[in-house]
Image 1: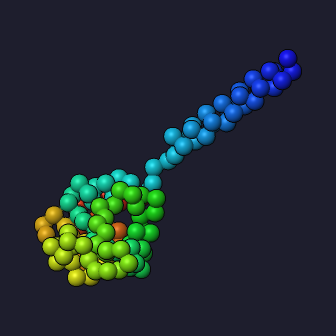
Image 2: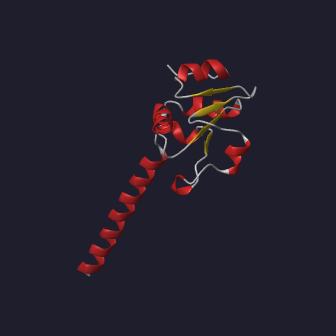
Length: 125
């Protein structure tokens, strides 16, 4: 009988731990720039870059946890073996390159303020 009580208590404790972990996972706060990055996408901005490009990494880091919402296109083939067809067709010549809805482009690491100005997207305070 003692073993069955211990088993029930053990299952109960595990259930509580799992519930707490799920609760914390589902209540994660949004990233500071989530709405801004989503707006960039909505406004037709595209960030062309490459996994090996240090400037691209710097640009991504500016978005912090919100980078998952940035309209990013990976241009490099595996092992730096050239550029993919999409980026070749878009005539991307350097990284990072931002293209906007009006088809204008800016290259280099852009301050978020400049991206906001170019797209009309609002930066958070």
